[in-house]
Length: 226
Image (cartoon, rainbow, N blue to C red; front, side):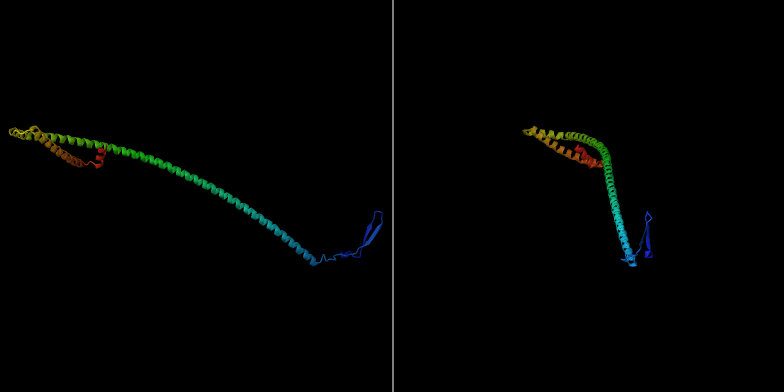
């Protein structure tokens, strides 16, 4: 610009007229192109660029933060959904195991009940069989004892007949009244005494015979309860 100072500026019109104007250089009165101004502008530009970069970085950081929050929120939702599905699967599996366990226990109880019933029936049949055998044995012993007692009574009556005859003769000789009544009393006393002795002996012998044969007390209790 300083080079143009003092020179003329020529302009030619269309009609051939030429005009001249002297160039006067009056430039940079405010030191616009001075080093200090240039440096200041450069610093301001750098500050503006720094602020712009800072704002852009802030926006980028904010965007990243939002993206991170969105990502974490999505991961949290996905994790919660997986946990919910897992809990539902665990509950379903637990219910299935409990159902299978309950069915197995019911089946086991049925089998055990069937086996126990079968075993009890078998034991009951064996006890019935033993009880019947015991009854037959007792009946046989009772018949034998009856026969023996009958035979003994007949022998005893045969032995006591002369005594009764002597007593009757004595009563007749003495002329005592109620001869038949006295005889009946004697017979009743003898019969009562004999029955008591027979019953006691039969009970003792039956108990000894039962113990000798080895029958259990529980079997006898079943028999008498029936």
